[in-house]
Image (cartoon, rainbow over all chains, first blue to last red; front, side, top):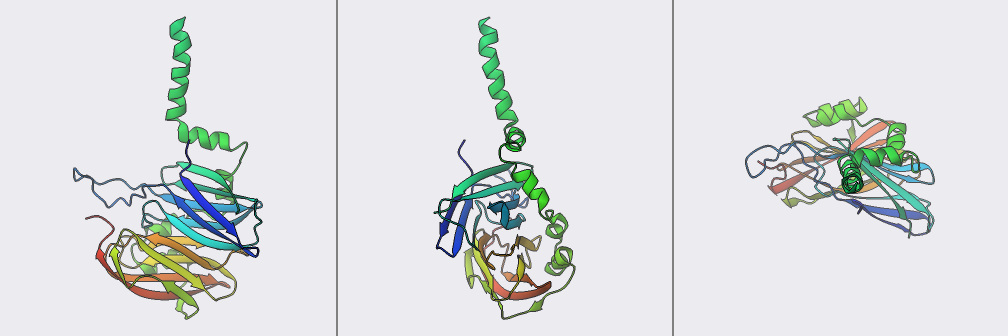
Amino acid sequence: MASTIRVRATSSGETTEVQALIQHPMDSGYVKDARGELIPPHFIQQLTFEYDGKSVFVADWGPAVSKDPYVKFSFKGGKKGDDLKIGWIDNKGASDTTTAKIQ
Amino acid sequence: MNTTQSGFPATRRLILKGAGAIALVGLGNIPFGFAPAFAAANDKYPEDAFKQKGDADAIKALYGKTAEPSEKVKLDAPEIAENGAVVPITVSSTLADVTSISILVAENPNALAASYKIPAGTLPSVASRLKMAKTTNVIAIVEAGGKLYSATKEVKVTVGGCGG
């Protein structure tokens, strides 16, 4: 199964820059479909990044985050070839996780 | 005989399909132990703060205090967003001991858009893309050393991003 998470983590030696793009509708619950019916809210609530057994970034999201969300941050440390674990969970209880190699 | 043999994989596929998400989480616990355990180990998702309508109420629900404007909070947002569905917003800070960064859109149906936890060792800078219903203030909150600092910028929205 193709992952919904695309991650690029690049180490510059001192810091690691992480860019993540996730496939998700991020429906706010305020938008109507073609028949004029409200599309119920469906959005990622929490996105977590873990490196070396420790949390390096946690995103708590509401429905105002854009469709197919993108996020960029950096953390100190992180070696080329090491694993970065990423996972999300949405308001319907669905989730996905992936592991990316730091480049 | 044939029915039984072909029936088994079909049923199995159906179960896998139907319970895909649940199965993933369930099986994931053993080899990865990641998403559920990890999410629980951190602070709970601030559901109440995300439900507040106004920006002041959301900040109060999230942090229980108010923020003071600071030049050390940098909010990068476009002057004019042609498409309210995708507004790129970057928040960074030169403050020390930043523990979280939150972004609010004052006149969205629910003001709080995103809240990021910044553990020690993670740089106080985050870029993401938000939806904006109409022209309004974007407010960046940076929590540093237990205090709240803010920066505000008005973003003009040509086409709203919340449907309607």
